[in-house]
Length: 204
Image (tube, rainbow, N blue to C red):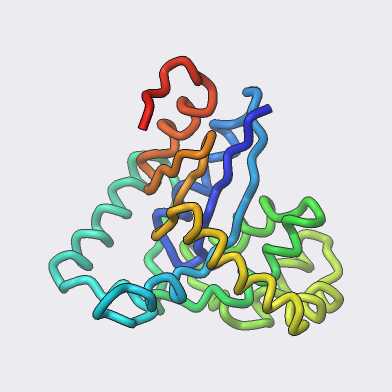
C-alpha cells in the first residue's frame, strides 16, 4: 500500500478542514494514512529576515484567510466557529498526538482537539482541556500527559521539524505522497490521485 503522510498543525483552520475529511477520502483505497503532528512556529522562525513564530499576514490577507476558511467549511459542511483566541498554542496537543501515532489513537484524538478549538472554542493549550479529550476517548489521560511532557519526548517532537523541512514542508496542511509534497487543504485530492496513479506522474 502507498502511504500518504498528513502533516498537520492544530492551530491551522485549513488543517482542521483537511483532518475532517481525509479519512473518508482515503477509506476503501489501497492507501495507508500516516498522521504527522507538526509545529509551524519553529519553521516560520527560520524565514530569512522575518524570524517570527507566527505567520503575521497583512490585515487584508488575514481577513481574507479567515473568510476563505469559513467559505471552505460551509462548502464542505464542516462546522467552524472561529476561536476567540487565534492562533492557539498547539504544543501540548502535538506532543500528545505524537504518542497517539505510536499507539493507534492519533486520528480520533486529533479530530477531537480540532473540534475543541474550532467548534467548541476551548483552550487546547490548557492541560485540563487535553485531559478531558483523552478521558472522553477512554484513554489514560494522566499517564499519557506524564509521558508527553518527558524531556526525551519533547526532543522527539522537536526533531519532527527537521524531518518536515528536509521533505520540503513549510506549511500545514501538507501531504506527502510518493515523495511529492502537496500543500493546502485544496490539494488533498491531488495528493491522493498522485499516490493512486503512478502512471500519470510527470518527471521533475
